[in-house]
Length: 362
Image (tube, rainbow, N blue to C red):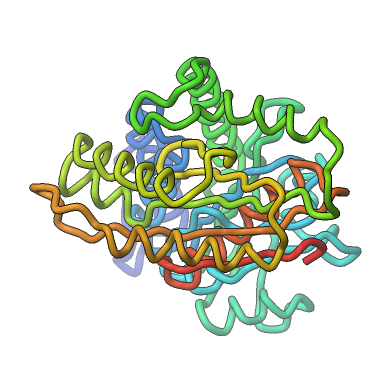
């Protein structure tokens, strides 16, 4: 059977059927190999990025893979993990929910419709797809849910330079990948719930995420004294993965601890300062006006940059990116957090080591 399968065609070249089966086998083997290390990763985003990189590195036919984490009610989808030669396309991609995008693959999947591949060409009605076809020779797009049943956690999008590539390899294979990503995120959430059950983060000494959430919930139940509840900051330690990879995890912990100390030194006792997860910090500044958001955030960014510790073995200066937003009295915490998170992602896209302020309603 195998001898017949790999027999060359009359032209001396492998037949199209042979090439397609080889691509199917290659992709299946790639996913299996990567999956063997997936669940061992403590950082769910790093685990998903590792798998996406494995897919791109395995075949020249995948030009781009990106992932987004969120729920079905989302009004805006922006890639949070981007890998592949066509990364420049996804770096500024923002899919807003409207009549046209509801017909596209991303919102079709979020709305619970079955997964199927979309063909892309230079004559596509959707302008970004024409751009993909012209700049990166993309011919086929597949978006699969990161989900298990009704429990939706996000989307995985793949772009191929071959027409009908995903039909050839098998869409079911990528559906299973979405379920695997869901399992990773679910496992990480359970682990985080156990680790943040105490009031204090063991690495930085700051409030744990769960305790900070309790404090903020209590503050939110009290009627605000002004039209503005305050200012919310999300802070990310730039290049933290590189610090861990090149200097070791103990040095990474020291870097997190140092940033925490800078925040504590430069903020008020009444402010809520929390290690929100991984290399991310959340700061709640109650009773501050919106005009203070950029000033305070920029001060913190400069303080960290100026106070890089002389830690033996640290091969890079510490820098932070900040997403800031003023919070009116009509805002829920979830809405403010989503706005600050999107601002933080923009700060990273702008080259890191900067501040982006998101105004309410933006």
